[in-house]
Length: 485
Image (cartoon, rainbow, N blue to C red; front, side, top):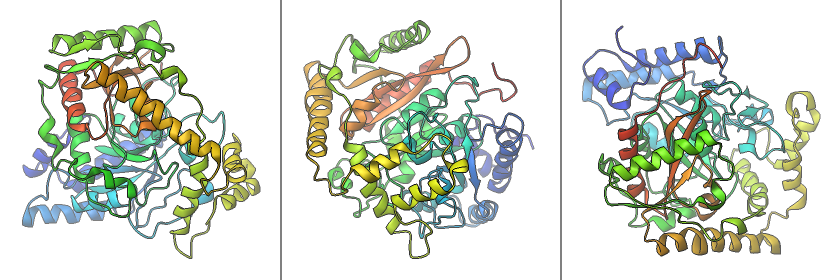
């Protein structure tokens, strides 16, 4: 078979499928072989947590459908990995990386999974993740879970993977799947996307349904696509769209969702836009190498017709500190999710998860569970704590009104540009969209990206800019999977 799977895009694969050069069943087998060779053997990347036992049957049925009726659309027969906190009503588990939930099965697909299946996607398996979206304890490395172990960065073993969607990013980077789905509360798509040299779209909270996703925060959670190209990420975004009246956050999207976001894939998308650089605070952790990569990216954007406002500092950046919002929302959100798993579910509450871990400390408590304990025993679950109410209001004030909204209005900006994922804390608390795009590699091979961010439902503008930058820079390269530095 002459088809080259490494770095193959959705468009490449569809052309090969339509030409009869390959079938979806063969495609799944090719990905599975790569997983066997490199994820569970050889380098042992450890990004894939579980394989759908029906993946080949699904692929074969979609091949038959293609022959008889044609393809449903761009996602027909495309293998997808889901982060392990996204429900599938099939033979796979949904555990958020926890051994306490290792035997947990969802009763039905998450809303976005239903949409992906309707589009013809093959749900090939679940990706490893930082356990409970890095909300289990302090000091646990990103990409580690008691159920799945440690995900490694394929570009440099000494570099972190980022989290919590570590497996989703790394599996895409290593060509273990075509595209994947991650979730974000505060950087969990942007951070591993940056460190894994892949595209990550963190949508506006309310653009995609959160129903059927094991939660962390009721106000900040969202799913999003991860891919090797902006085009593939946008095609995935299209496939997950749909109205879900059971998710209250979607009430704000009336008239603000576009049917086809590929309309905004514009190679000239940087011409005439105004991009602000919030240098104060957000550049303090950059190395000289990373700063040079960022500045080179800004120079390229300027050459492509963007007006760069530098600096465009966010006046509240240094006022944004610890917030109790996620801690207070976690227990109630998780318990509500667990209660909907059905009467046969082995674990029904956060307290039962804590008790399970205490009973199996060697297997589950390598790094402890102090955050789970704090969430269970220091929060009421009723959202009546004065500090929670004040912190939620403060987050909206400092991150939205007096933060991003103010700086964008002051300088008449179309977007903000952050180094790596350093803007995730402010954009996530605002519920605003971001797209991370690879921008280069350091001398030791560690990936580095830039993140475009804007106000609610400004995905079209961000897609234009991200696509134009990607097409002009073309820096992404796959990891060798042969040796570490």
